[in-house]
Length: 96
Ligand SMILES: [Zn+2]
Image 1 (cartoon, rainbow, N blue to C red):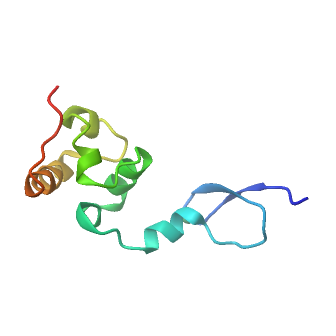
Image 2: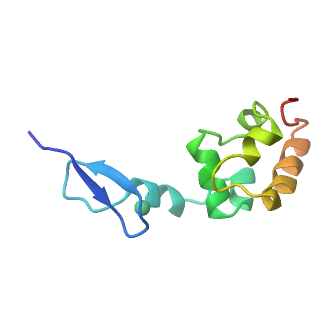
């Protein structure tokens, strides 16, 4: 039985792998350019949303602007991008 070991990749991601494959799943994800608004964001902001399992405008619209802004890695500079992405889909941030 293979034991899963905790590994840390060069970018500091921690992940468990049972095989000898050195590929970090988080880096793999980052290599694929996400479609839509996520691709317009900087990596820290994108990761903040991904950590919240937000990958679509619809999911984003389930949060208030304040909630999104409070995410680690999210900055005020990303908010206009998000607002615009929501508007284009006829959506908006959740009202507080
Ligand atoms: Zn990684």
